[in-house]
Amino acid sequence: MRRTEAGPIFRMQKRKLGKQQKQILSNVIEQLQKDPTTGLPNKGDLNEVWGYLHEDNLGKVYLGYKFDDDTITLISLSRISVKI
Image (tube, rainbow, N blue to C red; front, side, top):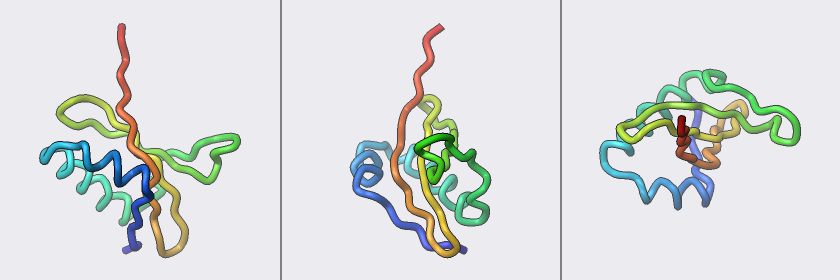
């Protein structure tokens, strides 16, 4: 299992989450530790960054991360809102 590091932006965004949202995020991080290629790679200038889209009780959340052989670095969390 890979070691997980949290970047400063991710840490700041995680502090704003509720208890249930943190639990869902913890489950997502465990899944990424087992297989970080579960997410999708970005293209262009951000080709080193991968993204994983998941849902919590308030909607969809995008988790940006990078990984190598022994470390996953969590970069950011973004709430996705879609208006129809």
